[in-house]
Length: 257
Image (cartoon, rainbow, N blue to C red; front, side, top):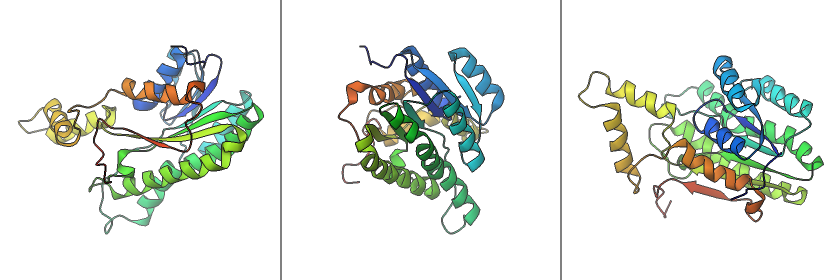
């Protein structure tokens, strides 16, 4: 299928590993020009070079970081696609987490998307329209008990997506949110190794148990499987898709949630 994306320009935060890099690979295969942003310079440079992408070393949880990305996009002549993907899980209780932890995740999951959208959307409008995709989580609707800050900030990102979609529809800019379920990212693999060290359980057995407990499909998805859905929502073939949140979770979400 031709997704009609050749020659477009896409910006991806957290673009050097996991879901972000899988999306970058999938878009590159469609002939999309890429601008990848991430904190780790060595990996970002290597991954960007492999895809022929531009690289912006930036921590998008900061104003300086988002400004650096916006400046790079402006220097490239603008962008047609913005994928706000940078993020990470948390582990705390509400009663014990200090203000600084709440602020850190708010800046990473919400303010990064706010600032980048505010800076790049006018360039999209100038080019005739575009697409903004915000990568949230199933936890935005069905929270996990050990990461309340992650749950809350991802829920805020989901609502931001809806509000932004309504505001940008007249400018031919489609905004959607994606709520992934279990995706086999390096974060999950690292967690599995840490939690099974010194036990009789292998990391693979730990992950299999998580999948069987939570996802009716009974397994994790690969980042590439999720990336295909991102590509579709970036495409003009998804022209009637805006203002929505899409679950990609192997059936995990309880319909009552």
